Image (cartoon, rainbow, N blue to C red; front, side):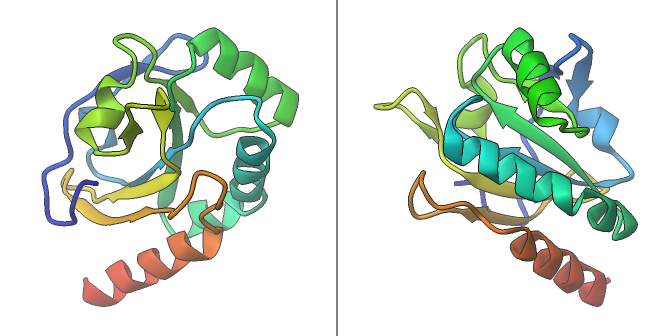
Amino acid sequence: MIEPGTAAPDFALPDQDGNIVKLRDLRGQTSVLVFYPMDWSPVCTDQLNVYQEVLGDLDAEGARLYGVSIDSAFSHKAFRQHLGITFPLLADFHPKGEVSRAYGVYIEERGHNHRALVMIGPDLVVRWAHQSPSPLEIPGANLIFDALASQNAAA
């Protein structure tokens, strides 16, 4: 998994509407990439719902969330609408998992991502990263809030 202090690997991924989101678009903001295995699974549904519930609080703390999985933009659009998710879902679909591999969170033998959170600072440097010990364990929103507080205290 990518280490804090590392320059965030470049990417250009389509969101659920087909708009390309590039790493350079994140400059000047604190961003959290939420890597998750795949749309429609019960645990992924729970995970994204947890983050949606606290999205206003995360925004107030200055963090923008971006979900990332190996699903297509079409799947993301339907999944996002089904759940009522308002943060973007980025499709690491083709080549499958390329960005996830660059961040060190792709599970080759399973063909999907680990559950991982990567905080990228306004300067596009990784500030914090967390990977769940198991794909069944949801990283709680408290981890993001703690990382934000730590970053704010250091600044």
